[in-house]
Length: 134
View 1: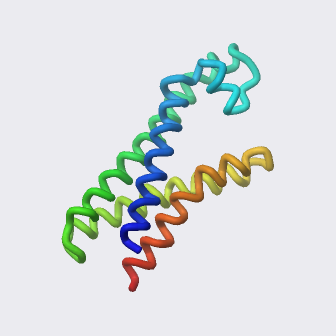
View 2 (view 1 turned 135 degrees about the horizontal axis):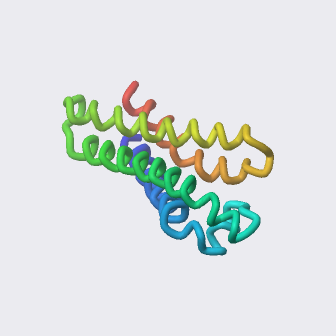
C-alpha cells in the first residue's frame, strides 16, 4: 500500500504542477482561460494576478508532496526521515483534498473539476493511512 499511496501522491503532485502552469504561465491564452470558465480575454487579463498567485499555491503543494514522497521512498521504515515524509505527503495531499472539497461546495458547475482535483490526493491519503496504521 505504501507504493500505491506514493504513486497517487506523485500523480496528484504532477496534476498540481500542470494546474500551476495553466494558472501562472498560460492563463491569458484563450485555451486556458476558457477551460476555467472565464468569459473573455479582458476578464482573463483582469484576473491574471489572482490566477498567478493561486498557481503558486498549487506548485507549493506539489513540491511538498514530491519532497514527502522522496523522504518516504529513501528513508527506512519508521525512521525520522520517513515520518517527516509522511507528514509532508499527508499535509500536501490533505490540503489538495480540502481545496477540492471547497471547490465542490462552490457550485454544481465545479463538481467535475473538484473530482479531478480531489480523487488522486484522496487515494494517496487513504492508502497512506492504511499503510502507516497497519
